[in-house]
Length: 241
Image (cartoon, rainbow, N blue to C red; front, side, top):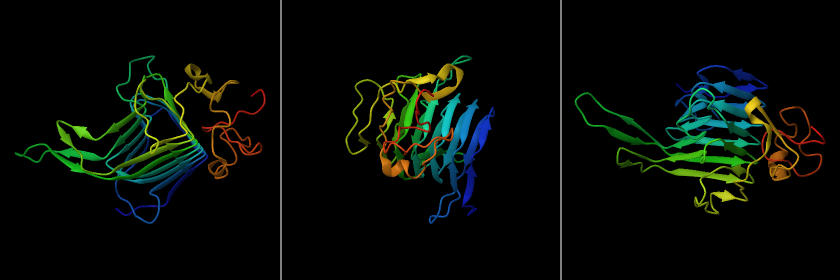
Protein backbone atom coordinates (compact mmCIF):
# COMPACT_ATOMS: atom_id res chain seq x y z
CA UNK A 1 0.00 0.00 0.00
CA UNK A 2 1.25 3.47 -0.91
CA UNK A 3 3.69 2.25 -3.56
CA UNK A 4 4.33 4.90 -6.19
CA UNK A 5 6.95 6.28 -8.53
CA UNK A 6 7.57 3.05 -10.46
CA UNK A 7 9.23 3.55 -13.86
CA UNK A 8 9.46 1.42 -16.99
CA UNK A 9 11.55 2.85 -19.84
CA UNK A 10 12.66 1.25 -23.13
CA UNK A 11 11.20 -2.14 -22.22
CA UNK A 12 9.78 -5.00 -24.29
CA UNK A 13 7.00 -6.94 -22.56
CA UNK A 14 5.78 -9.89 -24.62
CA UNK A 15 3.91 -13.20 -24.64
CA UNK A 16 2.20 -13.32 -21.24
CA UNK A 17 -1.31 -13.38 -19.83
CA UNK A 18 -1.24 -9.78 -18.55
CA UNK A 19 1.70 -7.61 -19.53
CA UNK A 20 1.61 -4.88 -16.88
CA UNK A 21 -0.76 -4.72 -13.90
CA UNK A 22 -0.95 -1.54 -11.81
CA UNK A 23 -3.14 -1.87 -8.76
CA UNK A 24 -5.22 0.45 -6.63
CA UNK A 25 -2.71 1.56 -4.03
CA UNK A 26 -1.75 5.09 -4.98
CA UNK A 27 -0.22 8.32 -3.76
CA UNK A 28 -2.19 11.28 -5.09
CA UNK A 29 0.86 13.46 -5.69
CA UNK A 30 2.70 11.23 -8.18
CA UNK A 31 2.06 8.45 -10.70
CA UNK A 32 1.85 4.87 -9.53
CA UNK A 33 3.60 4.02 -12.81
CA UNK A 34 5.29 5.99 -15.55
CA UNK A 35 5.83 3.84 -18.65
CA UNK A 36 7.73 5.29 -21.59
CA UNK A 37 9.32 4.11 -24.86
CA UNK A 38 7.96 0.62 -24.27
CA UNK A 39 6.33 -2.13 -26.33
CA UNK A 40 3.67 -4.35 -24.72
CA UNK A 41 2.57 -7.06 -27.16
CA UNK A 42 0.94 -10.46 -27.58
CA UNK A 43 -0.90 -10.95 -24.28
CA UNK A 44 -3.65 -13.55 -24.00
CA UNK A 45 -5.61 -11.21 -21.68
CA UNK A 46 -4.54 -7.58 -21.05
CA UNK A 47 -1.62 -5.50 -22.23
CA UNK A 48 -1.93 -2.84 -19.52
CA UNK A 49 -4.39 -3.48 -16.70
CA UNK A 50 -4.71 -0.51 -14.33
CA UNK A 51 -7.08 -0.64 -11.36
CA UNK A 52 -7.68 2.69 -9.66
CA UNK A 53 -4.11 3.77 -10.33
CA UNK A 54 -2.30 6.83 -11.66
CA UNK A 55 -0.48 6.03 -14.91
CA UNK A 56 1.48 8.25 -17.29
CA UNK A 57 2.36 6.58 -20.58
CA UNK A 58 4.34 8.07 -23.43
CA UNK A 59 5.72 6.82 -26.76
CA UNK A 60 4.44 3.28 -26.15
CA UNK A 61 2.95 0.52 -28.26
CA UNK A 62 0.19 -1.64 -26.74
CA UNK A 63 -0.77 -4.30 -29.26
CA UNK A 64 -2.34 -7.66 -30.04
CA UNK A 65 -4.12 -8.80 -26.88
CA UNK A 66 -6.87 -11.36 -26.38
CA UNK A 67 -9.02 -9.07 -24.25
CA UNK A 68 -8.41 -5.34 -23.79
CA UNK A 69 -5.10 -3.94 -24.93
CA UNK A 70 -5.39 -1.12 -22.36
CA UNK A 71 -7.86 -1.51 -19.47
CA UNK A 72 -8.28 1.48 -17.16
CA UNK A 73 -10.59 0.14 -14.49
CA UNK A 74 -11.96 0.95 -11.02
CA UNK A 75 -11.40 4.65 -11.62
CA UNK A 76 -8.02 6.37 -11.56
CA UNK A 77 -6.06 9.08 -13.33
CA UNK A 78 -4.41 8.42 -16.69
CA UNK A 79 -2.51 10.27 -19.40
CA UNK A 80 -1.26 8.82 -22.68
CA UNK A 81 0.95 10.75 -25.11
CA UNK A 82 2.15 9.56 -28.53
CA UNK A 83 0.93 6.01 -27.98
CA UNK A 84 -0.27 3.42 -30.48
CA UNK A 85 -2.94 0.96 -29.39
CA UNK A 86 -3.51 -1.63 -32.10
CA UNK A 87 -5.42 -4.88 -31.76
CA UNK A 88 -6.00 -7.36 -34.57
CA UNK A 89 -6.21 -10.41 -32.30
CA UNK A 90 -8.42 -13.16 -33.67
CA UNK A 91 -6.34 -15.74 -35.49
CA UNK A 92 -7.09 -18.26 -32.73
CA UNK A 93 -10.35 -16.95 -31.26
CA UNK A 94 -12.30 -13.73 -31.34
CA UNK A 95 -11.85 -11.27 -28.50
CA UNK A 96 -14.84 -10.04 -26.51
CA UNK A 97 -13.64 -6.57 -25.54
CA UNK A 98 -12.71 -3.45 -27.48
CA UNK A 99 -9.04 -2.71 -27.03
CA UNK A 100 -9.49 0.37 -24.81
CA UNK A 101 -11.68 -0.19 -21.72
CA UNK A 102 -12.62 2.69 -19.42
CA UNK A 103 -14.41 1.62 -16.23
CA UNK A 104 -15.49 3.61 -13.14
CA UNK A 105 -16.80 1.02 -10.68
CA UNK A 106 -16.33 -2.46 -9.28
CA UNK A 107 -18.81 -5.09 -8.11
CA UNK A 108 -18.82 -7.25 -5.01
CA UNK A 109 -21.28 -9.50 -3.24
CA UNK A 110 -20.92 -10.01 0.52
CA UNK A 111 -21.78 -13.43 1.88
CA UNK A 112 -25.53 -13.65 2.11
CA UNK A 113 -25.94 -10.20 0.58
CA UNK A 114 -26.84 -8.77 -2.79
CA UNK A 115 -24.57 -7.72 -5.61
CA UNK A 116 -23.30 -4.20 -4.92
CA UNK A 117 -21.68 -1.58 -7.14
CA UNK A 118 -18.92 0.62 -5.73
CA UNK A 119 -18.38 3.73 -7.84
CA UNK A 120 -14.81 4.99 -8.39
CA UNK A 121 -14.03 8.20 -10.29
CA UNK A 122 -12.04 8.20 -13.45
CA UNK A 123 -10.70 11.64 -12.67
CA UNK A 124 -9.25 11.83 -16.16
CA UNK A 125 -8.20 9.58 -18.99
CA UNK A 126 -6.55 11.81 -21.57
CA UNK A 127 -5.06 10.71 -24.87
CA UNK A 128 -2.91 13.11 -26.91
CA UNK A 129 -1.46 12.36 -30.37
CA UNK A 130 -2.53 8.71 -30.04
CA UNK A 131 -3.91 5.95 -32.27
CA UNK A 132 -6.61 3.56 -31.01
CA UNK A 133 -7.49 1.18 -33.82
CA UNK A 134 -8.11 -2.50 -34.51
CA UNK A 135 -10.25 -5.16 -36.12
CA UNK A 136 -13.49 -4.59 -34.16
CA UNK A 137 -16.07 -2.07 -35.36
CA UNK A 138 -15.74 -0.19 -32.05
CA UNK A 139 -12.45 -0.10 -30.11
CA UNK A 140 -13.46 2.04 -27.12
CA UNK A 141 -15.68 0.77 -24.29
CA UNK A 142 -16.91 3.39 -21.81
CA UNK A 143 -18.21 1.09 -19.08
CA UNK A 144 -20.51 2.74 -16.52
CA UNK A 145 -23.43 0.26 -16.25
CA UNK A 146 -23.68 -3.32 -14.99
CA UNK A 147 -26.64 -5.53 -14.05
CA UNK A 148 -28.99 -2.58 -14.26
CA UNK A 149 -26.85 -0.48 -11.90
CA UNK A 150 -25.36 2.81 -13.07
CA UNK A 151 -22.13 4.13 -11.61
CA UNK A 152 -22.42 7.55 -10.00
CA UNK A 153 -18.69 8.18 -10.35
CA UNK A 154 -17.04 10.67 -12.67
CA UNK A 155 -16.11 9.40 -16.13
CA UNK A 156 -13.81 12.09 -17.50
CA UNK A 157 -11.95 11.27 -20.70
CA UNK A 158 -10.85 13.00 -23.89
CA UNK A 159 -8.94 12.32 -27.09
CA UNK A 160 -6.94 15.12 -28.71
CA UNK A 161 -5.41 15.09 -32.22
CA UNK A 162 -5.75 11.34 -32.40
CA UNK A 163 -7.22 8.52 -34.47
CA UNK A 164 -9.90 6.60 -32.57
CA UNK A 165 -12.03 3.81 -34.01
CA UNK A 166 -15.63 3.98 -32.86
CA UNK A 167 -18.78 2.49 -34.36
CA UNK A 168 -20.23 4.26 -37.38
CA UNK A 169 -22.75 6.86 -36.27
CA UNK A 170 -21.35 7.10 -32.73
CA UNK A 171 -21.62 10.60 -31.27
CA UNK A 172 -18.19 12.19 -30.82
CA UNK A 173 -18.85 15.32 -28.72
CA UNK A 174 -16.32 18.09 -29.22
CA UNK A 175 -15.60 18.23 -25.50
CA UNK A 176 -14.26 14.66 -25.59
CA UNK A 177 -13.01 14.29 -29.17
CA UNK A 178 -10.85 17.24 -30.21
CA UNK A 179 -9.59 17.06 -33.79
CA UNK A 180 -10.09 13.29 -33.82
CA UNK A 181 -10.36 11.07 -36.90
CA UNK A 182 -11.86 7.59 -37.10
CA UNK A 183 -10.09 6.72 -40.37
CA UNK A 184 -7.92 3.65 -40.84
CA UNK A 185 -4.38 4.73 -39.85
CA UNK A 186 -2.97 2.43 -42.54
CA UNK A 187 -0.45 0.44 -40.55
CA UNK A 188 2.14 -1.18 -42.79
CA UNK A 189 1.31 -4.80 -41.89
CA UNK A 190 -0.66 -5.28 -38.65
CA UNK A 191 -1.28 -8.99 -39.30
CA UNK A 192 2.48 -9.41 -39.09
CA UNK A 193 2.79 -7.04 -36.13
CA UNK A 194 4.14 -4.00 -37.96
CA UNK A 195 2.38 -0.85 -36.75
CA UNK A 196 4.53 1.59 -38.69
CA UNK A 197 2.59 4.10 -40.78
CA UNK A 198 2.11 3.55 -44.51
CA UNK A 199 2.65 6.31 -47.06
CA UNK A 200 -0.93 7.60 -47.11
CA UNK A 201 -1.65 7.31 -43.38
CA UNK A 202 -4.04 9.99 -42.06
CA UNK A 203 -1.97 9.93 -38.86
CA UNK A 204 0.75 11.80 -40.75
CA UNK A 205 1.31 15.26 -39.17
CA UNK A 206 -1.92 14.91 -37.15
CA UNK A 207 -0.32 15.44 -33.74
CA UNK A 208 0.19 18.65 -31.81
CA UNK A 209 3.80 19.77 -31.47
CA UNK A 210 3.51 20.53 -27.75
CA UNK A 211 2.85 16.85 -27.02
CA UNK A 212 5.36 15.61 -29.57
CA UNK A 213 8.06 17.61 -27.82
CA UNK A 214 7.45 15.58 -24.66
CA UNK A 215 8.75 12.52 -26.56
CA UNK A 216 10.82 13.92 -29.45
CA UNK A 217 12.27 10.52 -30.41
CA UNK A 218 9.85 7.89 -31.64
CA UNK A 219 9.84 4.20 -30.73
CA UNK A 220 12.21 3.29 -33.56
CA UNK A 221 14.68 6.09 -32.79
CA UNK A 222 13.65 8.75 -35.33
CA UNK A 223 12.85 12.38 -34.58
CA UNK A 224 9.13 13.11 -34.60
CA UNK A 225 9.58 16.89 -34.27
CA UNK A 226 12.18 17.77 -36.90
CA UNK A 227 9.41 18.78 -39.34
CA UNK A 228 7.41 20.60 -36.68
CA UNK A 229 4.39 18.32 -37.17
CA UNK A 230 4.50 15.00 -35.27
CA UNK A 231 2.49 12.05 -36.51
CA UNK A 232 -0.08 10.47 -34.20
CA UNK A 233 1.03 7.29 -32.47
CA UNK A 234 4.36 5.86 -31.36
CA UNK A 235 5.94 5.69 -34.83
CA UNK A 236 6.89 8.70 -36.95
CA UNK A 237 6.85 8.11 -40.67
CA UNK A 238 10.22 9.22 -42.05
CA UNK A 239 10.96 9.09 -45.77
CA UNK A 240 10.52 5.62 -47.24
CA UNK A 241 10.52 3.80 -43.90
